[in-house]
Image 1: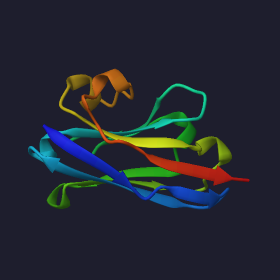
Image 2: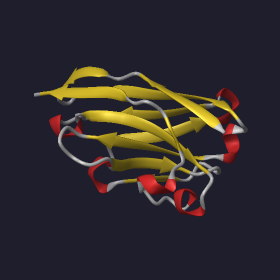
Image 3: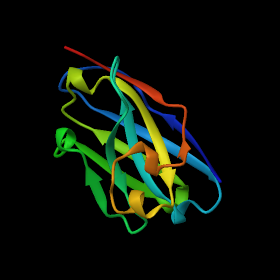
Image 4: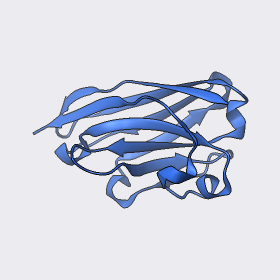
Length: 126
């Protein structure tokens, strides 16, 4: 198993930046494929970005060119650098881990992930 704890959320002006972090503990972190998901107010949870064991990255179209996912296996950590933030990026952001083939192929679906953090709130004000 792996335990996940997100941090770095907050309130920011549109056009600003935030960096989310996810600290992982438990089993071998490097064996997991990792993802970031978000839950906008009144909407369903959606996949934002994923990274496989080798560091290959995947993004949903709405964040391409603005968000960057990265991992540091030596520090058991995952990050999401978010630039040029928009009000529609407002959501609770979750870190997730998986060893499934679906997740590791970049499929941004929450059913492909079995381990979740509790989330961190990101609010972008215009």
